[in-house]
Amino acid sequence: MSTRNFITIYTSLSKQEKYAFTKFVKSPYFNENNVIMRLNFLLSEYPADFLKNINTDELICKAHGKESLTEEMKRRISSDFNKLLKKFLLINEIGSNNLQESYYLLKSYRKRFLDNLFQSETNKIEVLLSDSKQKSREYYNDRIRIKLEELLFSYTRGNKKYLEKTAEDIELSYRLINISLSLITFISSVTSGTNFNVSKNNVSKISAIFQLIEANREYYKSHEPNIYANYLLAKLFVSQDDNSIFLNLQSYAAENFESFNDTVNLTILVTLFKYCIYKFNEDEFSYLNNAGAVLDLMKENKTFEKVNEIQSDVFLSVILVALDRNQIDYANYFLENFYIKLNPFTKNDIVMLSKAIIYFKENQFDKVIKYLTRCKAHDAHHYILIKSILFETYFELNEFRYIYPIYDSLKHFLKRRDELSQKNIISVNKLLDYGIKLSRIKQNDGKNIDKLLFALENEQYFFHKNWLMEKSYEILKLVETE
Image 1 (cartoon, rainbow, N blue to C red):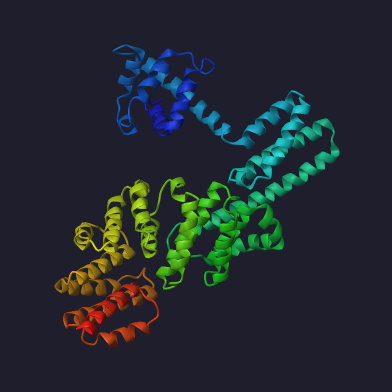
Image 2: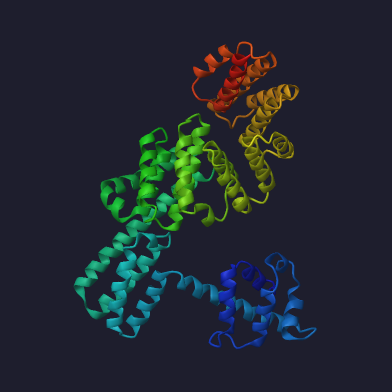
């Protein structure tokens, strides 16, 4: 066995877990080996990044107080430390899950014929089972194990009435776990990309689950909020043109997010936000306001504090939505506090692009150019965003000689990108076409600005139309004052 295995587990522990593990190692019930205590102390002295490359053989020898040890001795110490780590993880996992803890207590009480304690623990479990916040993905598995333990108790004690009731509870638990896993699998398959594509095969599979829930809608809505929220989310993907489902889900999430477990909370809020941005990019521009409302829920629920990773499209969208609502302080706060949760392969580029977007809002155009010219696009939407902001920045600086090359390159880019929808392409083309016309009008002292404004006002919303309107009115104002 490699002597590095314990390093892998140890570096995965949080600061609080390392502190708890130190107390665990010092407990004579779990460990009486002083070498293990010293090894743990040495590990606690080093940062995680350093430990990943540390020479474990030298570390073990140092803990033992000798310059060298036999390979067998080093493997034994490593193995003992590894076993302690695994035991700590198991105890920590059970201790953080009240249902698992209760399950093992029930099992022990039943075997020891401690019937009063068994009944008392059962009453406590019923309270836990009624708490929807407990209903994580593991909840239904734990519930079945507990109910099977109660079934054994009823059988061995000859309690026929309780036996029948427990059997019904187990049947319900199996039905709930099937529904829950089916919804989670469906949602995961749809949200793995950014386009929310739903295959006909997936729709036919999930339709039977929809029917089960819709036959008992009020039960799931009031007693199983986690399942019902996932049902609404899945329904949204199947019926993307039905705005009422989105509004229903947004309302249900706002009213019940304190009842959801953390997993459902994160899934619902992050996916709702991504869906708003997806619809906005598909020219459903009213969804920008919906994205703002979802972002408020995410802030209230501390969603970004809880997630392990933030996708680049979500990260940029948070910045853009915050700035659209003139929340520059929050945009800066979000960037400074959560950039570490970006994918390390795209992190630097997304941070530079985010800074450029904020600087543009603050009219610090020299800084915008500094960051955007160093920024690499990782998908078509990033490229469009970078080029369009550069286009607008050079307009603000009256550097018109740089605008035309951007116009040409972005026009050619739009022609050869199959992953962009026609709505996307038309919308960005309108920004470019109106932007070029506005640049010429600005160079020509505002001549024909009234005609351009009339045309813009009669257009439906398109990509960065608000910016074009703002700049057009500024030029009109200058013309009228002369």
